Image (cartoon, rainbow, N blue to C red):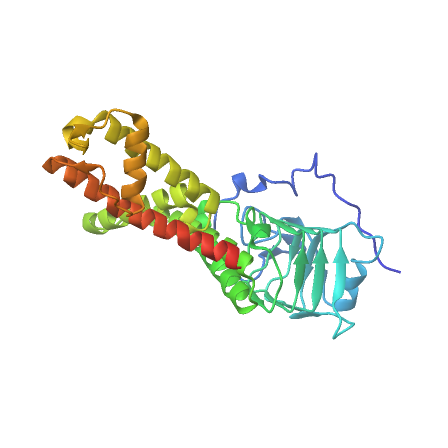
Length: 333
């Protein structure tokens, strides 16, 4: 007969809801929760909160996940392994909320989690091996040095996993590990998603390093890199967001078309020895230049016009090459 823990009221509980981390400063990395008697010390991202139950046997923990269970709360799992008792078949866990649970330095093998939520859990040094996650969410968890081997999981499940950007190094490592797993398992969609968030957390880490005491020359270089990462993310989704990239390309084309139309006289944009006067002509000329088709029916006749149009061609070539690459990667996967 399994033990059925009482499901927490997530609407009113101050323990297992998003935002719990707002008052928890980082006190350093620990590979096991700090304890005082049977109470885990609070206010530490690397520790559990409040009174917890020590579990020393796998069978005891599996009993908490029985058919009637809806939650598993305040548990410190002590064994180094958690393996399906039905191997080679997976042990299925469905519709369970894991709250304030520690799997620190545990190897979890052959488990299938479906529609599960992990809130404020510790996965410090945890290894997931041959596991599957379907419609799962990780909220305010600590995945420091987690590893995934032959797993099926969507990186978007971890979007809300790390509560604060000051743990950017953990975010970088997490999505780098998810990227490696996705590539090894030939999951191109998951790989693109993991790479997007990996670059995003790289930017957070770079911004964090900018606040540290460094030489001015080093800070200038890092600042330029940060601006480049930020612009690339906002305009192209770090090369992983096709819709954002197409919108940016269209906006840039309209901006350049408007510039060519407003300054047609300054640029000397002529067709049949006369300056172009309509926005349609300017849009047509800009599209031809940015796609490097170069029909030659409209040409700049002043040095400033030739310089500006040359810049348009370089920007257009780079942008549309990136657009073509992103479209190929999206549809070929």
